[in-house]
Image (tube, helix red, strand yellow):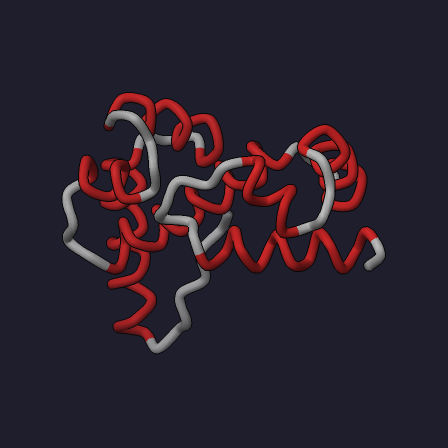
Length: 125
């Protein structure tokens, strides 16, 4: 199996398990590589370390959930494997520039304005 196929298989696993704990060893096993080589190959193919890729994907899913549900922020944080609401807020703000609560409020207002005018919601990531 070539490296692209190995990484594709591991990304599929990541996508299916964003709300579960994901171990580097599991991903490496799925790609038939050692942890060391998996980490290097993933970074080379995807352009960022596996942990950063997973964190960004979880934050993107959490951002979507913030504007499409009324779930508590702490519940969303824990669902996507952040150790606390504080850790989630810090990571979220680093990517989106605003805390989750502010993101939820501003995105809902944009959605309501656009939906009344017939425009489609597009979420910036």
